[in-house]
Length: 149
Image (cartoon, rainbow, N blue to C red; front, side, top):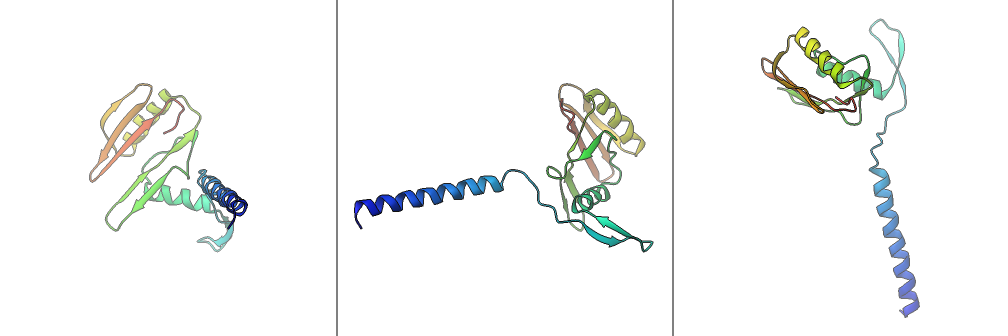
């Protein structure tokens, strides 16, 4: 091959490598793919539309039914993750919404006690943490200044 052909091939391979990197970065941009909505029949025989996002949220709530979610917040389905095995369920549930951190702190202090959780430790600052336990279970709640829980 002559120098011109080698130079042209080098440019083509360089461009292809760049496209692979850009495509890979675009694919990792944090967007989550959800299946299209589908219709399911509920317990009473009535059809209802089921979205994958709703199914994911219901699964998280079912895995942790005694963890309160403030009305001002929604479960972040991209950041939340649940791991289940036959003997235990472990998860990181991220909530996003609009409320001041002091109100969120009080909400979890009161709501967790009402759901039977015992306070292990807690501190309130720019990033507040509350730690609760039940027999065989433990939860840590971290509240940031931007009201992420």
